[in-house]
Image 1 (cartoon, rainbow over the protein chains, first blue to last red):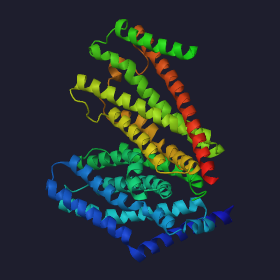
Image 2 (cartoon, rainbow over the protein chains, first blue to last red):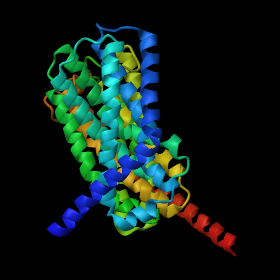
Image 3 (cartoon, chains in turn orange, blue):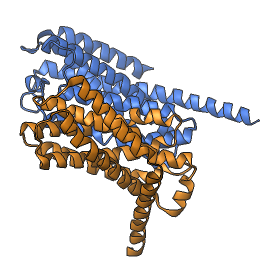
Image 4 (cartoon, chains in turn blue, orange):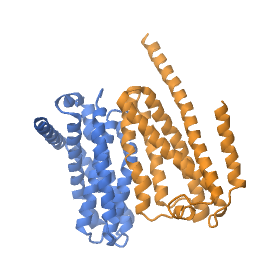
Length: 225
Length: 222
């Protein structure tokens, strides 16, 4: 049915635009995440100093900073709907899958904008050796895709519970840890000159599996929300 | 009653055999014995997580709270066995590698499984209504299970591991001393049956708890 598919594509696009617009109006999510990223980066950099000869430590620190910044704000796309009681209206106009995809795309944009600021700053402040841009960008891209896919579902679950903010980090960690481990090891390999193919394949497979499972499960998430 | 007694006698008997009858593997020495408890516990961990995931999917399909009782019970028992596997592995690592923990790929996997169970139970504790709790926990469980094939089958094959499958099991198939093999598989079967027994007990408790909850709810309404 081409008609319904195009309308669903349009719904995804409309939700993405709506997310961007409502984020842009207040910008508190983005501001909080950037502030978080820069502050934790400053703390890390101040604590350990320049580390040009330790790519293993650098890779771990880079992803810890990125994950902290992202986790502080990724949940709020859904929490905003629950708190504003707009979820019901949203479900009237779009299918669960369209809502999920729209929010996932927004979360990806969000992650990319955090990375665009944090990664260059990290490279300068920590005195990192020059990266191989191709593998680094591939690891960052696939890592963000997997992180986004995992955290969007968990955010949708958490938005319907008590104690939302506190629970999100704890509950999403088990889903995100394998991604983090592969991303750290890929980033380290990129600095040491080792091949990153295994990590990229792992990240891609994990991202695809998470996306497939979450798209199948989204229908069950909004029934009495 | 008879089945339960037989199971306990079976496990106790094979534990005695593990210490008195089964030989030791040359390099591992006395630490060979951990094999009979550590691997079955790790196996039950994976079995329980799979059991929990299957019942979660069944719940999403049929909306019968009975499946939710099964999923939650399996997660609790799986957590227990996961702790047993982690602790016995750490003790073995201290004896053989000199440190309790060094982020070997297998240690990493079991630690992540531990976190998955804890997060599942934490999520359940944050939701009051039984139906919503069952639904959200089921979605989470199904999604968390995505990482299991990666943790168990992919990661230990990509990264270098010190884990001793090569010593006990050199050609990738079951190729141990016959006595070790007999005790090992007997205890593996024993642990598996132990899991299903404790699981049925826990599900029965969950049923009673649910009935009490409902009765209390209807008393409030009156």
